[in-house]
Length: 351
Ligand code: SF4
Ligand code: SF4
Image (cartoon, rainbow, N blue to C red):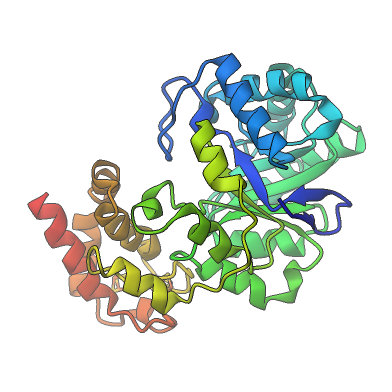
């Protein structure tokens, strides 16, 4: 295991972090799939990762990650609290709610978390999150009071990540990316505003989808040359921990063309990087729809189709009638978005 500085926080983190979704038990609608080990087994898996050099463990409140927070707390006591960094998160944008959630997390963990993120900040809830008395202000107050050590914003949106990078209250940004969905990582690498912030990456396996076409080593090595300090990998078994953490991964530049070529052995992928430059005046999130198409063909059929069917009929009808097609103006891939929407609509009709 190698280690990197986490922005200007003063923390040094392992390049591979432990994502706790797969160790949860409970009925929680999350991807990747989870393995539901009991507490002793979950602790043993986390201990195995620790022995391979992992020092960052990422979790969330029970409504989001089941009992993972509790299991991580048991592990923290066994391994020695000072030996690991705990990052936690809650999807609450109001300051009062966030105060309550951090307190609840500390109770579940049996210790204070080191890093606390406002979770799943998006383009609709960001105003409340960043506003006076919003969740970010609450985290700052908790940091001043010594309850947490660092504040964070976790988001799947580049625009939110950029806003967080410009905000001096934010220490760490957690966002998503992998060798296929590399658009946000590329934009972060190109923009100096992110330098000095701690950067943590999730969805390196694309919720497990990419494991059908790439090895863990390729997926992890493939992202390590982007300027992130830690790549979180969801781990639910000893084997998954070993696959993610046993080797040292030389940073390996998997070009987008190589990724497309590999995926083409399985299906005809849509070459969308999820850079999120396609703005639709009607607010349709094209990058999410195109992702469902690729995920569908990479094995997450039920989940991807369920998401796709939520609005594909409406988007298809709008795109058919749309004359300005503004979404295509800034697409670096030159994608014919209305035609792709038609492709998705046909797939949804047949499924
Ligand atoms: S459709 Fe184009 S602009 Fe939109 S996310 Fe994909 S690559 Fe980026
Ligand atoms: S074609 Fe028009 S309606 Fe469809 S996503 Fe693009 S801008 Fe939006």
